[in-house]
Length: 377
Image 1 (cartoon, rainbow, N blue to C red):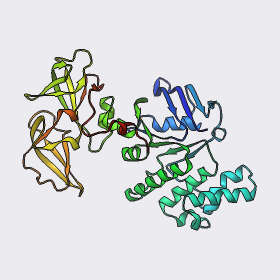
Image 2: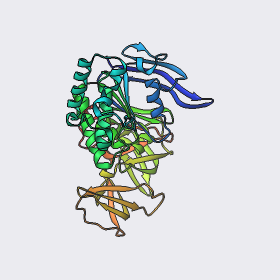
Image 3: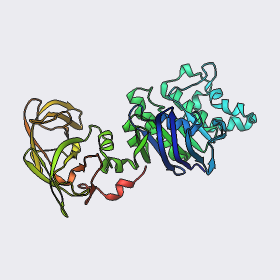
Image 4: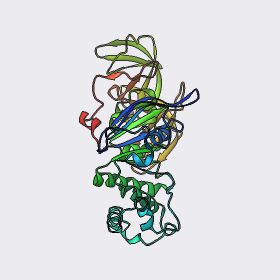
């Protein structure tokens, strides 16, 4: 079994808390990604699970066994690092076989395990080559093969693709996802790249300052962020965030005002928000040209033509204009420095209170099947 349970896990250096009372359950066979900005504690948490970092408080259970005091080799895990950590003087075969030789596995069984891992990773033709003859992606597959032959309960990946170029990262994302489906193993993966998190994970753990900001399926985090941090972190381009004043609240939703215009967002209020300054969130893909419940005339300063999509960054005629952009069709007919009327609908908006917590939505976002929000890969 590859179930992982963290209970009240803490890590501190003196008075500085790096990880703060984290409770987390990862089910057997899940692909879970830890994501967050630099310094949020994601790699530290992974190293604590692996036994490479001592925990300050709490318990770690792997397959039902408490492993706090066990060394890494006894925990039933295998770790793949950012650096490939291959032995340059050894062949691919010997690199993959190394942990099995340490365990003094009989040669026939060792060969079978290495060849099976090579078959899964499409390295059969490379077994007699040395790492210097391989591409970056092939070297990373060798490092993964070395983990596979140990048949661990849990695979741990610490930013394994960050040294690869963009095209190769895309290919390796697909390969790792296929590998997870073939092995049906529990995998915990650390990255700062939200694209990797969204495309590979069954569930995502968003970390912020040593705390879990939100834990859920990729589309759940994207469409139903629980707080401003997750709303601003998940999504590229980022969610537009506008300061608004609450003017009314009732069964039909919460009405907010922005520069003389009002819009009623279908959310349940927190207490009595009337008179408070709230934050209205709208995803760039929900910005429309010339239509919406609220319209804003704005000047696009930068227009990025990406083929399938066009991204436009706007200067607003008032207030803070650092975070307002729209994602449009690839053939959208506008140019930079020419003002356009943009808009958005109330049903597509998010609303956050003064402390950054999200208001609960009364209806699902436009054209979204609720079942998609909990769907895994």
